Amino acid sequence: MTVRRRLAPIVAGLALAVTGCASQGVPMDSPSARPPFQTTSPMPTPNAGASASVPPVRWQAILDDLATRKVPADQVTLVSAESVTFNDGSLGCPEPGRMYTQALVDGMRVQVKAAGKLYDYRFGNTNTPKLCERR
Image 1 (cartoon, rainbow, N blue to C red):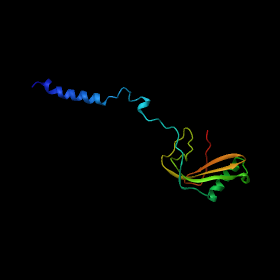
Image 2: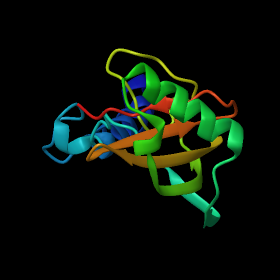
Image 3: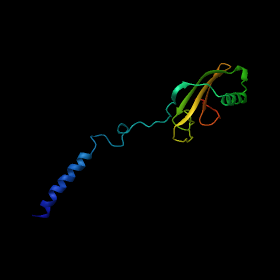
Image 4: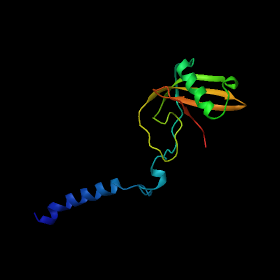
């Protein structure tokens, strides 16, 4: 048996394997072959028993932050407070160009109203509020 005859089945098998792996006319790097790129963080997920009361230390932290914004404490009213699990360290309010820890963060979302304006505060595992200002 010649070398050609011995290699013929191997070459045919390789050719079949290569054509079987080829895409069906769609380039592998085309946008339709990839899932879409996510550019924003998903919204926080409410925990069981989502409605919550604001601990006094956190309420004071919100009032202190609003005072730096020239909002009198007697004008502040609670709109909602809920315990949430945030998808990452951005607390559901990412800022462009910033990096965040990629871990679930148990926290709280507190919305207050003052002088006709809604303020959306987020807390992670500390009592320091983060004002979420959507751009």
